[in-house]
Image 1 (cartoon, helix red, strand yellow):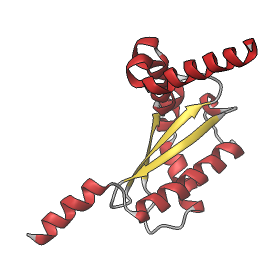
Image 2: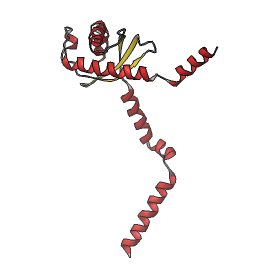
Image 3: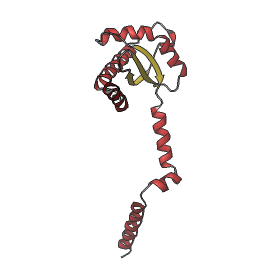
Image 4: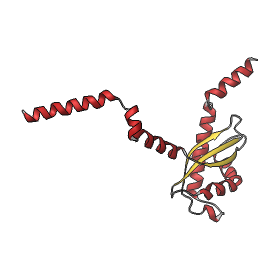
Length: 153
């Protein structure tokens, strides 16, 4: 029963240190492979992509790479990368020393879009009014008034 409880706690805590380390090694390997550009698939010629994160399963058998095309949105890029995943898995296996090369899948990284959306929301005048500190705004008005008084005297 303790094992079950501990397993649940570890799952709730997020990825282990080993998962993070292996994911980062795979991310670096993929970035190097993409930089070299040794692809036979014409859809992947002149590939210009950022690998922002690699998440790996606790058993290290499956990895999801989050990618962002540098030349704008290319939805077909993710499909092409997933089609080439067996080749990329072999390439990663040559660069990262693991007992078992993980299966790779690719997803478009939407975290930048999400961060931009949050930023837009926070800068919306209606939200900024509710979120922003009212006293700081009042203090700035007081300081501006005092500065105006100094200049007038």
